[in-house]
Length: 211
Image (cartoon, rainbow, N blue to C red):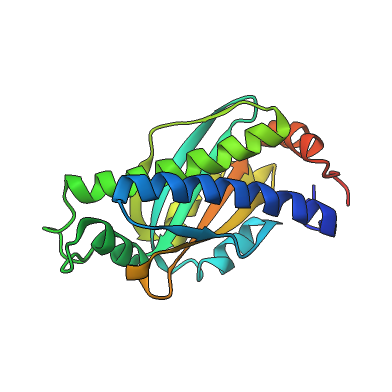
């Protein structure tokens, strides 16, 4: 199956879903942090697994990932991925701990994990809600699992079996900005539906399986 070529109308629809989700996520994050937060969606697309890996810097790139199992009418897996240095910047900004580092095991405490999980919950919940509203399809995320590892190892955990029968994911690029974050934090939201759920989801989005 190939779901990689989208029309401009289809891309606009996915981008609109991303923009609605990011707006809701920014509002929730602002309330949580008592800071003005902006979120942008530079691009939205459908990519295969090799392109996913390339987008985040290759299999050897050290990343911070939050993994969610998605239950409901369109089950699958969601990854919210940040490069380590950007995840560190985000944690420092949200906890006011300017010395935080993932290389310092003493720094990675329950508060750090909780902060990252809550950000992942907000972003994932907001995007899935927007997607559900557009498609009238129920999707519920699980409790997030935090993983700090090479990109190849992280992505393989959830998609090695899926890759045998499916080859694509919905990608929503996400940029988080605040006064304290200088150039912003660039993350990636990957939604990998189970193969049997793809036709239903893409039909609801008006995306043909054979474009």
